[in-house]
Length: 123
Image 1 (tube, one colour):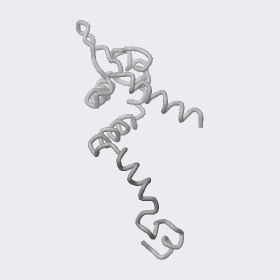
Image 2 (spheres, one colour):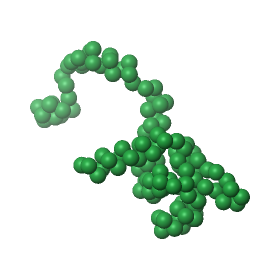
Image 3 (cartoon, helix red, strand yellow):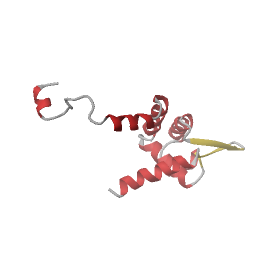
Image 4 (tube, one colour):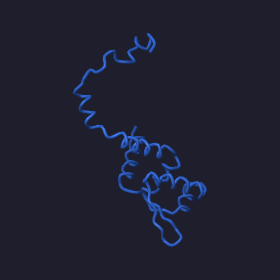
């Protein structure tokens, strides 16, 4: 750290101001595995195409061709993104004959999307 950074107060000069608060938060902190999974979920939602797919599936169960039409992208591109979302357990697939219908894996994903949109729109 440079002298200028110290002067501007970028780092505390003591190691812990409120040990009680640190202990309280530490006891509430989730495991590294859980936090990594959460970060991966947000990373998956960090792609605009995947975010649009999640939004669409929060409204209706749709097949690949319907999602492709909605987003104006190829079915191949949609399939690729759906594979990522399936692997992240954000969407699930239901087969009906030769057609695969996709929906959100659970209501938590819908709530996450709604909260994220509310955060962006209400700013």
